[in-house]
Image (cartoon, rainbow, N blue to C red; front, side, top):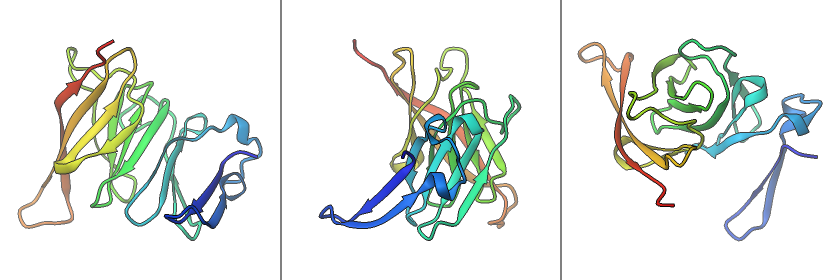
Length: 178
């Protein structure tokens, strides 16, 4: 069946198997395609299933955390795609239909989202990768190449670590040359 994850060591030797369809109680895995599969520093599997309007965090011991709901308002999911986790535990998600990149805190509350301006609007953001210095690389469709966004964190209250704000701005863009 599909929705299987096999974990191997650096030499390619089998370590563990995860049956995500069984774990998530998905009866029809062929219509529940995973997008944006990635791992965070703790070894948690991060992925989205667009037809369910959900993002998933699955720990190595198979504890499942899930969030998301369908809609067009800030923080809602249209067609979710890539997902990555920042070192401080925030989740960054691309939404192809809404054409935004969203940032959620570790409790899955929306912190901010970025769509870009008319000239720099995102074109169906799909996959995400984190770079050094708070950079987020976003693949796009329609020959738009890769958008490079700068993610910077600040604090709402002086001396408070509990209330973090994020600013996402367009850093640069790498376009297809074809």
